[in-house]
Amino acid sequence: MDKRKFWRWLFKYSRKKYQDAHMEVHHNDIKCRGCHEWFSINGIDFKHEYVGEQPDFGIKVKCGRCGTESYYNLCIAPVAIYCDENGVPIK
Image (cartoon, rainbow, N blue to C red):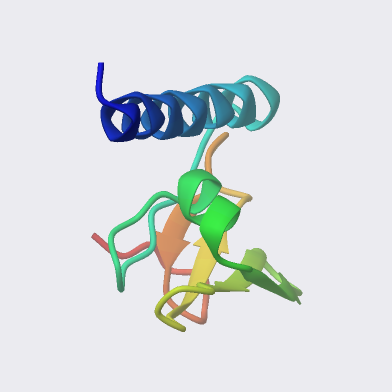
């Protein structure tokens, strides 16, 4: 087996195991609207910034990879729901 093939397999396997562990703890994951990467996986390679809590509904985060700022409502469902800056869900 080629060494590169082995290391590629190990890299993908470890990312999957990390995402599984994240899901076991948090029971949900959010996807960046800018780069379309899962935060649990993207957080390994890039430093995501937790901007802070929004007073009425949830949190604001900034993707470390593409810089997209996103709002998530934590009050209307048991999972984080993508929303606008007022807490209204977005499709």
